[in-house]
Image (cartoon, rainbow, N blue to C red):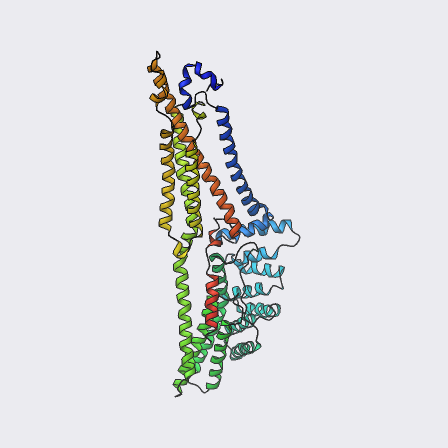
Length: 532
């Protein structure tokens, strides 16, 4: 492009090419492009800075990796936590107990007990850790050592009935003697009368992470299943002993054993006014199962001895069956809806990726075509029209609404097929605008050469105008597509930051974002507690 003032062009042969950028404000156009690029880079830089500072600079390296490991599968989590534990040993005079405990929770089978022993040595007063350690010993068949750990956990857990129940299970599993069996049943009876609540350990978690996602809910259930395994074992031992002695003379003792087992199950369920924070459906199932099996055997025992079961016991059987059916329906619904909820949560992420792919591909293709036709700085001096910029603004607004719908829509408002179709249509529309809009904006060659028809060499001037228009067209289309891509990138950055402000997480934290149905679970637990 010529650096001469525009007014001098009327004395130059190329003065008719001004609509195609020849002799235009090249410097101003270049400044506009650079300012827009800097604005896009600023948005990206701010977003990346927030993400990196929060996820990698907010805490120390060991704490950051510990926080990150909690949302990984066991194999990946194990590798990260081993590195954290080894570094912490090197850098700290006293190793951090929760790092070792977190590793012990998911450690490999051959060294898991060794890791738990190390964690307990670092935190000997942690009652929850002792309970989990004892349950892991029970799972590995180390019943006598589990008895010792559960006894110690009872001393360190305050008013928590769970360690005593688990101790009774370990006593019953470690010996087949009559004395140990009666000791276990007596301990269950005494714990039933203690009035202490049954409080289950909760997963090791980071205070900055929410607890209402499905990942944390799964960890709670896995930990509850581990702690419930000894209880199931105790139930089996008691019921087997009752079945073996049903034909004997110890009817009163059998009734007492079954009644205490039934009370144990009721205590696991809790009362309506009890806190449901440590309860989950796994605990409710074992509580209902204890009551059902004990009650069914009581009815069978009474029937065998010629006594009709009372109406109260029959009614209780029906209530237990209904409560169990409600939990089964809830668990079935939870698993069936998980994939749907994950799909709804990831929809916005996939839309962002799809948009970046489509716009990026279109921008690269138009850039290649611009190089093929040898666009120069003259063609880049053609400014975008106000109409084009208004279209771009309307397109960005429609994208923002669509993205908000995809992010917040759930239940009856979630229509993934419609959202994806609308999003794809907007992407295709902006590409079509980039292709069609420059052709409408730039005047035809014959129009710009109208005043030159009588001049010699008109054919050459017309041919030169065609080349200039072609270059201006591809330059304008490519720059419009680049404007659309830059606007889209800024929109995505605003969305990421806004998402973080509103939810406390980033859109990629799917495991922590997708609902674990914690509120629904607690509501169901309270409903079942009110039935008894």
